[in-house]
Image 1: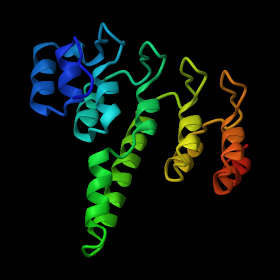
Image 2 (image 1 turned 90 degrees about the vertical axis):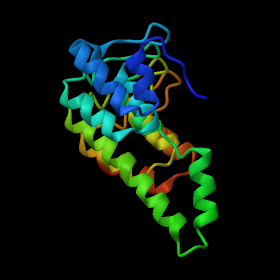
Image 3 (image 1 turned 60 degrees about the vertical axis):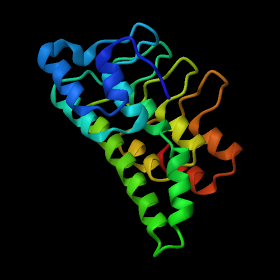
Amino acid sequence: MGILYSEPICQAAYQNDFGQVCRWVREDRNCVNVQDGFNGDTPLICACRLGHLRIVSFLLRRNADVSLKNQKERTCLHYAVKKRFTFFDYLLIILLMPVLLIGYFLMVSKTKQNEALVRMLLDAGVEVNATDCYGYTALHYACEMKNQTLIPLLLEAHADPMIKNKHGESSLDIARRLKFSQIELMLRKAS
């Protein structure tokens, strides 16, 4: 079922209902930055939670504010980086892997979509070193998830691998603790 939002445009963005998002923006141009009363998510954050590229692109063209934070103090970039494959994605990948490597191509396609989403947000000027209520930056989350595709993008956008979260861990510390040697090497080169 997912998340229920009190703001209709947030619900539409979360559910990938492009027509409804367009309708709400046509009725009120200011609703692109409305924050939901329950958790403070904006339509942009809602769309980033599930990686709805078309809606993110539409909202960014309508000047959605990439710097707005929700009640957990997370920006849209935090959610774009935290986005994972859904159970259904994994199921399709596993089932289709033996069939002409269709599962592999599906996995690559989903990874490229997530990369495009993060690149879109970085190009829009999102603060790459913004911290959430736990002191985590997008780079912290990318390191925890061993996301070797997004880490170079974040570092290229000047993500700081030495920022410490509320537990006193930097992104480099996380990579070291989880024994992600390739990521640790990337982060060392950047710092």
